[in-house]
Image (cartoon, rainbow over all chains, first blue to last red; front, side):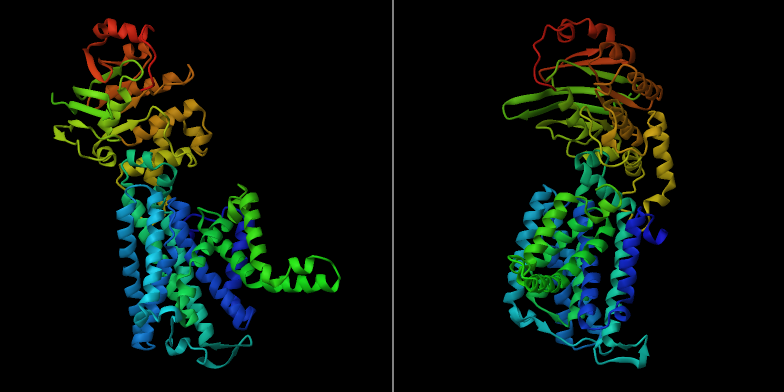
Amino acid sequence: MMILSGDGPRSKALSALLIVIVLVLALAPFLFPGAKPANVAANICISVLLVASYDLLLGYAGIVSFAHVMFFGIGAYGVAIALYGLGASWGALALGVLAAIPVSVVLALAIGLFSLRVQTIFFAMMTLAVAYAFNVLASQLSWLTGGEDGRSFQVPEILRPGFKLFEGDVFGVAISGRVLSYYLVFVVCALLFLVLLRIVNSPFGRVLQAIRENPFRAEALGYRIVFHRTLATCLSAAGATAAGALSALWLHYTGPDTALSFSIQIDVLVIVVIGGMGSMYGAIAGAAVFVLAQNYLQALMGKLSSAAADAGLPLLPGLFHPDRWLLWLGLMFILAVYFVPTGIVGRLRGRG
Amino acid sequence: MTPSLETKDLTIRFGGHVAVDAVSCAFRPGELTAIVGPNGAGKTTYFNLMSGQLRATSGNVFLNGADITGQSAPQRARAGIGRAFQLTNLFPNLSVLENVRLAVQARAGVHYEMTRPWMLRRDLIERANGVLDEVALAPKRDQAAASLSHGDQRKLEVALMMALEPDIFMFDEPTAGMSVDEVPVVLDLIARLKADTTKTILLVEHKMDVVRSLADRIIVLHNGQLVADGEPGAVIALPIVQEAYLGAAPRARTS
């Protein structure tokens, strides 16, 4: 229990769900060989980290930020620029990550100290402005970032698809650089998730919740809430940066669409709400459900649509047309918010 | 004896309205001062100026002789000024124990520790349980603060201040809205604090019998001004106090 920082899932159904998700993710390359499942699994891992770091801010500290994807982008661009410019070495990768994290933290510190003194709504507006400016900057500085095209780059050799750790298979799967990449993503995300879990269950994390509940009273108890909020912003930014770096490493590419798109920010918000705000476990449940829906809903609808067409039903083939999958995803989201406002975690813990 | 808390010409204006008007007053350790006055007299505002929730337009606040006028509420809380609020001001969705534990944690100076779980700080939890025992809330420690009855919320409000172990206790109508059988718990608590002569206690209270039984001294605020200051028997006999408490004064807005 202590590795979970004393904050267990506190519900059998939730525990079971989390165990299944984590086991499947841990064994994904063997259970579901192939490129698409690997992408989905890696995407889930990265989303868990990205969403958990966002929930530290939104669910625990009660601060709304629109700059989370910017910190994600800083991590992705850090790795891309370093590997593109310095060649595919571990040193370049380390440099990229070690440069990106301080950039994010300093930026978060600046935004936090500047705007969290006032009201958190001002902070939200600030992050929106800064994130937008960063977006423009990333596409304008094309000599550095590759502009709209982004940057494709090589990764260190043992992470390349062509690499084989040894001849022969394990359970019928060759241990390629792709499998190793996946496990790098999985392990780093798992470790950082546990770090975040520890932070929210530390005395510091408890003060964050107090500030979310009643900032005025937290101050009257002697807590300097500006510092707490700013520190939470910096930690959250560092988590997002790590997620961005992993994403770039997985994709071998960083561009505005994969690293800075505002739709990533929206996805993060949606996952937090689906999973359950204010619980780190919500990030795991929410990310799994959302990423699976994002990747397989379209195919599922295609099947439904053609089945309906074959059965000669009116209207339904059009309604389930694969192009309308976003409509259904949106509808599911609205229903989820309406009927399960506390998210998957809240529902499974019996507070929904 | 040097005053532990002192205000000099303390004034705050809201637009054209002077809510606290040049109040100079000193409070000493071992003394319980009741602050009385009609609604809207500026009692709570005066408290807010001393504990830092509001900043003075002019004048100064001194803590143990040091000027703290420029300090924020958290700084003053850490310096030993404890405050319980008139309108209950808790962490509504956190448990009763957690509410108090957060105050204990603040007192222990554990603000930024993030490398180990809070549960391992048994000392903080035990101290919080001790405070809950004092205010007779221990059986309700696992309930959310918002689910408590009004009287219990008032007790928890006081418990948060107790947990801070301040040198200066500022009670703002601690028994307001409490049922008759709940009042003694809080009054006993204040009486016990009074026995410790190193503590300075300030009490805003409307119930004259409470004031009479606890106060060593009464000051009267009226329209933001300090109009009387002295020992209870003499002050209560003053016409202005009689007027305010025997119903002759028009009811102004709440303080």
